[in-house]
Image (spheres, rainbow, N blue to C red):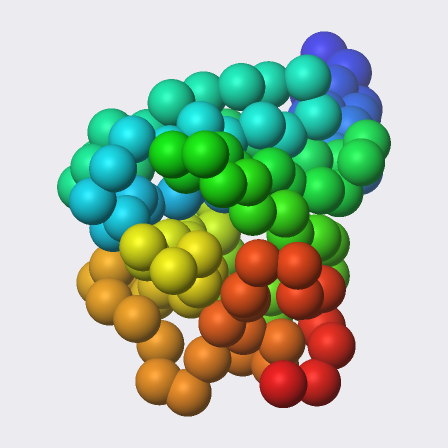
Length: 135
């Protein structure tokens, strides 16, 4: 019986160790207007001074944000936000970002919610600028 329990526990651990956390973005709106965020097939509205969490766009790796009559486009590959700036909870990892009225996107400290200074390489993002490109 003990041998079966050990095999079961080892099997569960092997399955869990192969699982990758699902990446999410928590985007805070500091643009003083409601934003519409489109990511893969998701579309979410973010009221001013609110935060919305959505899955990282893994299919297109693109993020489109509509603000008034303007549209801002970004490329958000997960690999360009260092692991230190992700919050890991079970099978979910979340990066915290903030967008301002000019479309600049900065990375926030996942523990305190404050802007990182200095920002990781490639940040802050500006509309049309690809993550990971030199500033």
